[in-house]
Amino acid sequence: MVPPHVGLRGRGQSSYSEAMTDFPPLNALIFASLGVLAFFAAFAIAIRLAPFDVWKQVVEERNTATAIMAAAVALGLCWIIAAAMH
Image (tube, rainbow, N blue to C red; front, side):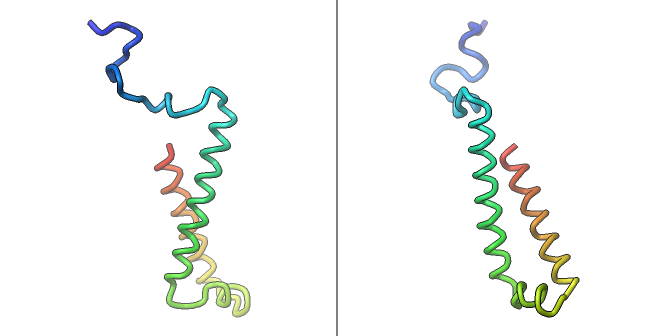
């Protein structure tokens, strides 16, 4: 039988809760800022990989299809980052 203070992971192995701080709002702030940074980095890469100037298409030429595509990429990235951080 495993003693109650050891848990299921055994001794010497870190658990997910040990990596977090004892102050939950700080944990939320850390994970939120990491998620926002990851989103901006991934979105900037996605925009640069586009074969056309997304900003010009959306703002100057008022291309609705490009705006919808950029929004879909943004939502997809947000869902992926949220699932990875959950």
